Amino acid sequence: MGRKRYETIRRTGESHYRDLTMTSKDDSTTPPKRTRSADLPLDQQVLHRVEDGVSWITLNRPDVKNAVSPDQRNRVIELLEEASAHLAVRAVVLTATGDAFCTGADLRARQPEVPKPEGAPDRPVGYVSRMIRTGAQRLVTAVLDCEKPVIAAVNGTAAGIGAHLAIAADLVVAVDSARFIEVFVHRGLVPDGAGAYLLPRIVGLHRAKELLFLGEPLSASEALDLGLVNKVVSGDELIDAATEWATRLAAGPTQALALSKWLCNRSLDVDRATALLDESWAQELNMQSVDANEGVKSFIERRDPNYQGW
Image 1 (cartoon, rainbow, N blue to C red):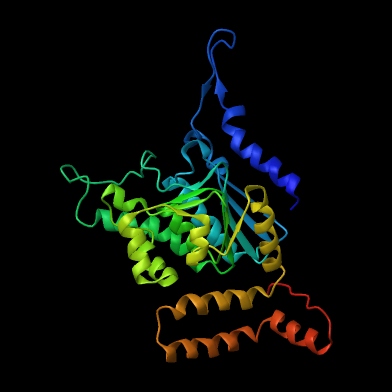
Image 2 (cartoon, rainbow, N blue to C red):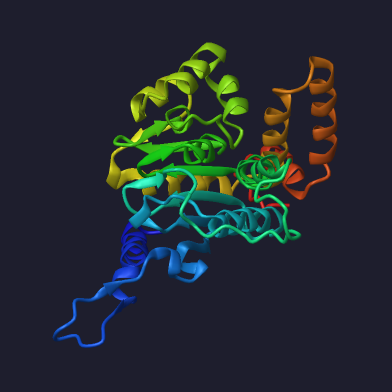
């Protein structure tokens, strides 16, 4: 995808609610009224396209710093599940418009109506647990379980569930102005979206507690030093960097990448014997793929492999 084309798409996304939703009774006397991005169709709140084998998923509510609503969350989950199922998709990029990646859950967004009998409390026992399991946890799990490699292109602040959405990706590219913030402690909340699961596994137990207990912002360079980020680039290099990696992954042996991702993620939770058994079965499964046989054949024939994705 060319840089010029992306800039056109990005500008279109950021200005859509400005250019297409200005209404007034009398343009000569009445100031134009801006419709909130939350009132736009869902396909404008989450932009999506598949190009060169890459599924681009872009949060597009820059007016609220891409705080994610339940509808947006469910759409991103749906697109990640589609990426796993569709053979034409071989890599995924998660990014956003504006100057923020995702600043957490949109607490002002419309919440789904839950039927309840007369006199029942608004928050019965189990309500919060169910909300977290089917909401923030389901979103992060969709990234972890996606069968295609996922790149997070972090264009700005990633806070709360937004930070966890980013670090759940397989590779993270961030602009040098990005910040990662564990905001929960500042609101008197327990971290959700698998933050207390992911952070100790990436940065170690004591650094994870420091981040969660103090809630101090991490700069992109600090996140790089801690291993939360793979690469830091300038703002105008972000999409080119994400495109380069995504294109390479999309041209790679898709099934081998999927199994490698599964092995790495699973290794954090199992003992050595189980991990090695998993590895042997992953090898068995992968050797049934067309790409594995193409890889071996191309090596013998001393040529570049031509992977198909299956």
